[in-house]
Length: 466
Ligand SMILES: *Cc1c(COP(=O)(O)O)cnc(C)c1O
Image 1 (cartoon, rainbow, N blue to C red):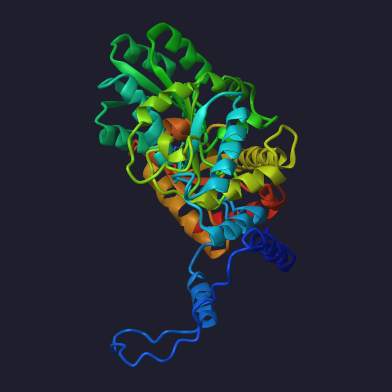
Image 2 (image 1 turned 90 degrees about the vertical axis):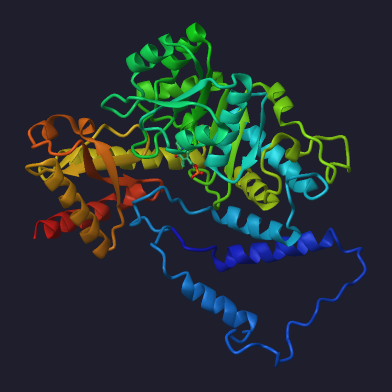
């Protein structure tokens, strides 16, 4: 797991830049302004003197030291997976052109690459037809999906589980749609009886099924939700921002894969290539099953869309200017690592899930800890055994800090105590939620590093006891 592309990979960028330049070779020469500026004597005292570019980049790199080692397997905390070198290089290559995927005038080639890459994502969910595009991230993508739901059923209520991403309540408020949260069962999935009871009261326009919750990776029972749609008539939006790629994984539990098997029946799907898809940040994706919802996006722009009668991505997107480079990076990544069962990319997802199952089993056998639900994807949550929920929470925070001192970076999550079943029943329940330890094992390398992760966790747990 490297922090950056190798020198050999960087030389591939150099030759790709040469190839790119060939495409513009017939232009008359337009020399750049000299980089060596004459000293500026009008500069006010308070402004730092300009530095040569090399010094600026050295200073920039030094400033970037202030980060956790996200790329390293001992970073096993939040949802952070390093972008693939091909994504980094293709992104850098594209910034030379700096295309804008708002309109074909500003990003012809990169718009074509976006349409291809997005069609591959739609095909992953079994869709041959779709309407979709990339977004700045999962939040914007979910906003568009719920916006369409609101256009189709104005004023109707949006439902999502109590473990759904908090963005759905906020997006609904932005869109002026009523929002209600549906309780979860002890495995963090939407409770079907509670959902049915709410649907019976009427007025529901959309149900968000979370395909991999952000806190624990729980997958809502999509099949049953779709069956309820047939009876009650509402839109089903699958928020697969985190878990979407797992539709291809071959080693999910039966119930989880049954839910993913029906994701193509959802009305809209969101997946974040900048989470599991090896992309730098700034790459979400929204997909609508019925392309005719494109009519809601229609607008007249006096400025853009003059170059051709072909579809401009800005005609089917709420955001205007968007980085064409994000589409180029995604396309290049999927060219190198196609989205296919059994392929290298999917084997990586499967390795992450194996790592999570193994960590969960090791923690379950450790008398110092208590585990939550068996991971459905690759996220593990666990608590520290203590006499009370508050003491357990305080102990989890100490383990988190001691682990960080030992170079193992975990995360914390505030979760309902019901997620921890038996062991917590014996504890004094002096608060309704538990601060638990959480580890997102997104990197395929986590499987090989599990022994080292467990050794450091062991030492951190001992240190936390004092
Ligand atoms: C991350 C996430 C989001 C938000 O996406 P961003 O890319 O962070 O804007 C929404 N829903 C789920 C389930 C997520 O995991």
